[in-house]
Amino acid sequence: MPEGAPVNTGAVRWPGPDSAHFAVREMQIKLHRWAGEDSSRRFGDLFNLVYDPAFLVHAWERVATNTGARTPGTDGATVALIETWIGVEAFLEHIRDALKSGAFEPVEVRQVMIPKASGKLRALGIPTVADRVVQASLKAVLEPIFEADFMPCSYGFRPNRRAHDAIAEIHHLSSGANKFHWVLEADIKACFDEIDHTALMDRLRARIKDKRVCTLVAAVLTTAGTSVEPEGSARAEKLAVTGLPADRIGALALEHRIMLHELTTRTVSLEETFMELTAHSVEYLAGQPR
Image (tube, rainbow, N blue to C red; front, side):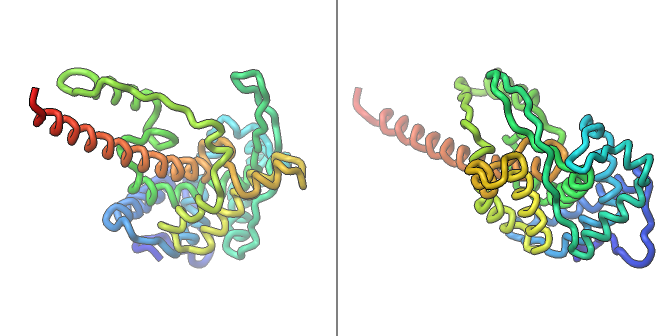
């Protein structure tokens, strides 16, 4: 168990939203520090944090305050319905017991079609509220660990970072005493549709050795992909092993960033190689007779 991790013993005491926020934040700071101090460290015994009351309350608040709170999954339950007919603590208690016992399994997502800028339609899978809470808790545990690895030049799908920050950085690097004059804009066709689940899980396991956490992430990936297509279809079979749907608050948002980090690392490596070759070329040309 990570040092300082909350201990789940006896009757469950559900903290208020503020107490949960500070408890989760304190643990996240520790996880981030440990990850930053040792880039090769693999974290175990994290699953107890996923079902810790503070993390579940924090996850519930993220889900309940999201714009999608009024949208149900395949079970028809919305945040408002759960608050009115079940009760938040009873709902979270059920999730916690299922996670602890190993009985929790993500259920099929509800498929809706949303328009794209091109005029085509895109299939979007909507998880149940329970699955959203588990994913948000999972993300709260894993995010500080992987954030320690992400590069400062990376802005996509990261907390407290947005496209405007990237634009501001470009302005900074291309003005004043800075000597950068070129901006390369590129787009990867169907980027997240082609992400290989096996490759993603390999990158996850490079930092996480808790088998229960890895198993849960793998189950989320499989369910999120296959449920938006007819069972047995070629597309469904492909999505069972590749592709990530759009997500902003759940674990899949972190999976997006993990794969973007791999792309960023390779891009920076190519940039450094190019700059080195350019420097050698300048040195060579400077030594040639005129």
